[in-house]
Length: 183
Image (tube, rainbow, N blue to C red; front, top):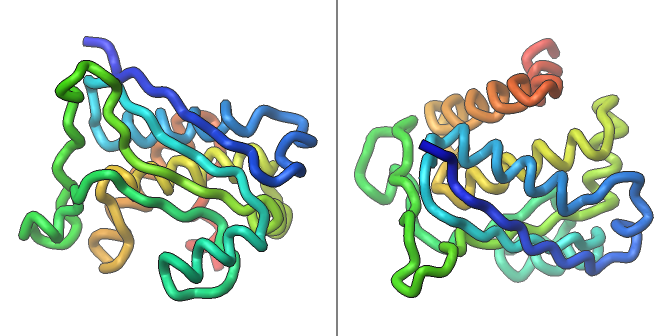
């Protein structure tokens, strides 16, 4: 059995993204693939949209969609309501998988992500991470949100963060939650 097909359609709205020493679209795709694997999505063809924005644009989006007029590192807009809580399952239960096929044979759109360059860069520097490693983690985190995972309750957070930690370590990155656990 082969894994799912995935494409990431990234729009670099803020000019700073083009000046990076790595391809942000490849980093986002890597994180999204890691999320599909971590969530056990084994088949299908999927598309994730991504906006590479700056802090000002993210503050605007965060205000419009979450009522919080400040930049944040990543925002997600799932195409499907997959969360376990909406299915009446106990906290910490895995969400339902996304559909594997579009009725017209096109890849299934999982939803959209947006990233704020300045915030991502500040966080990476503060944590002693490369910007690329932090972006991969945020794409993993955001794609898990697209797949119905959340961190609203302790059991749900433990599940989601456990998947993220395992996926990052498997890919050769540091555990993104190790610093928090040590402090």
